[in-house]
Image (cartoon, rainbow, N blue to C red; front, side, top):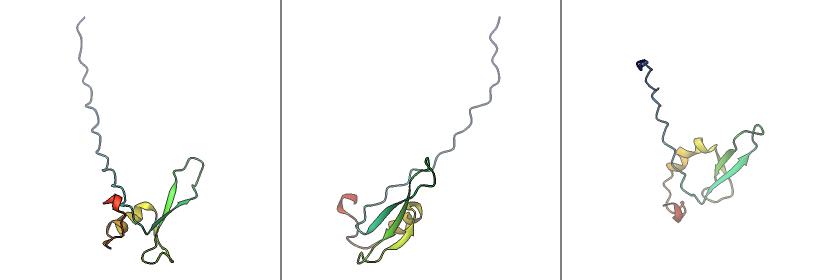
Length: 85
């Protein structure tokens, strides 16, 4: 009995997952608070607020993903912790 080669379809091409987002630099004025999860198995959600310049009034930035571009575009000198540079 001869071995027959069956025409198999090529394996599906796996799409490249987007690169893992870089971690946020550690800011001395950013406040991150845990929001209540929607269910028992839900992932934790966080609220981000910026307390620059005087730490008295916090400006809400939303969740981490919506705050990321705002925090990354911050150009104030000395605002980021030295261990994140």
